[in-house]
Structures are given as C-alpha cells and as structure tokens.
Length: 55
Image (cartoon, rainbow, N blue to C red):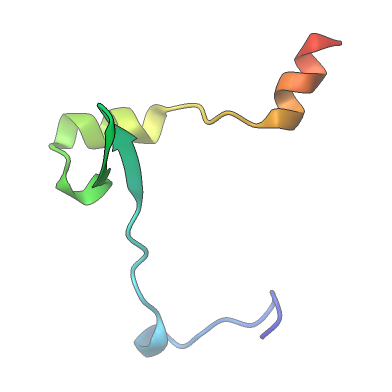
C-alpha cells in the first residue's frame, strides 16, 4: 500500500499511545483529562533539531 492509499474506515484500527511516566509505561488513554491535555502540549525531542541548535 502506498502513502496515497487509505484503508476503508471499517478496516482501520485505533492506535494506542503509551508513554513513560514516573519510571513505568502507561497508555495515554488511562490518564485523567488534565494529564491528557498536558501530554498533547509536550514538545518531543528530535536529534536533528538539537544538533541544529548547537551550531
């Protein structure tokens, strides 16, 4: 399947996102609404951005 093709809605699955919190992994869906909002606002580390900032 190429990037331009999409699956019919009936064949799609919901992706469960897990994150590490306080030393263990938990699904984000188990967070309370405030923590879910905080997770959406996080800025994720990318190595290329970090290297560009050093120069």
